[in-house]
Figure 1: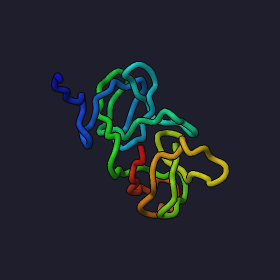
Figure 2 (figure 1 turned 90 degrees about the horizontal axis):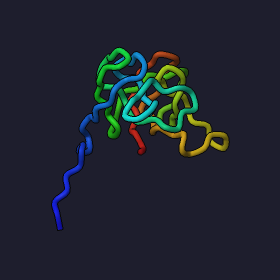
Figure 3 (figure 1 turned 120 degrees about the horizontal axis):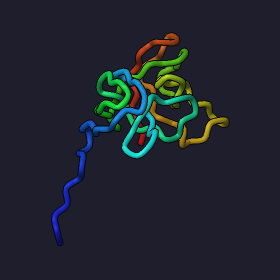
Length: 124
């Protein structure tokens, strides 16, 4: 049997090229072949969190697992699932309304309102 090594190890940022301007800490979505852009409301193809600011066409790291700091689009309670919101932010995932595949992670902290930064345990 031949040896195998993964391209990226768990916890490491993977590198992708941006197809739009990205701000460090934004939730990113796959926007094409090896490219990412800030997530929009309802995105199912989210990948992870930008490691740094990057202009369109530049490379950035993307953290895909673990606990990440994300910006809330509105108030969010601790202990609820969150989903993609506009501009790479997160919003409360709604039980009985939202499909499970929209869930990004579990909020570990409460967000008082828009622009609050909270810790989220990524679930993919």
